[in-house]
Image 1 (cartoon, rainbow, N blue to C red):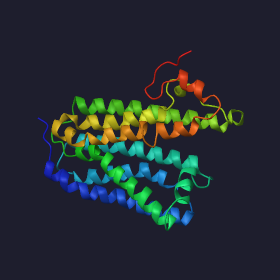
Image 2: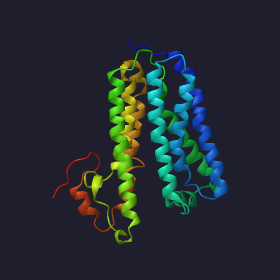
Image 3: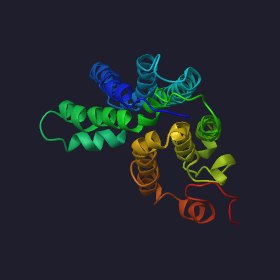
Image 4: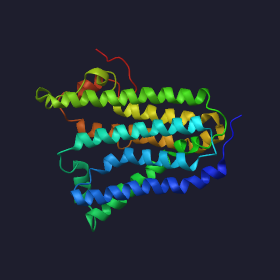
Length: 266
């Protein structure tokens, strides 16, 4: 049987929220020192890793140790890889155009506006989206088929995200590709292998808690919200609006899946 420690889970919610908030506040201080707010994108992955580690400590003695360790390692590996990738990508660059545009319209102090609209909002999202990670630590039954199925879906997602990011970085590093649309490798199968990878990672982490249906029902909002952000929010939809006028994008869009991978049309 797979039980769920509701009371212990509820008691762990506040410390996990505190971990997400602490990461964002430290990042805000770093951003003020550096003079750019793009560093908050690095904090996104770090925030999830911090929440996973705090949740692991809070759930000690309450849940199955194998599942607790599994979900913590999977979340931390994903978050740290993403943070390192974004940090390398942004090295030597100035402010992100998204934040420049937002801060140019900010009422009052732009930095305080960024604190409210970016840092605190992202901290809240990190806490909410990580609910399955937090809940997994309080499942009392042994890790079974759901846990390993979730780890498998997570692995597919990590491969898509990491390989897609690497392929795009190599493509952009070649001066001959300046202004061209990346349509090779995984990018020939989906216009957003990195976002599809994120999608799989978070549905995989959610599957780990599905051994306890009540815990799954209580945390379903997390992968649903992440899916919305990736597909209709700040991910795919926003990026494609930005790319719509680029030469070659219309043809690329016509032959390549918008999200879920499939062979390209010819």
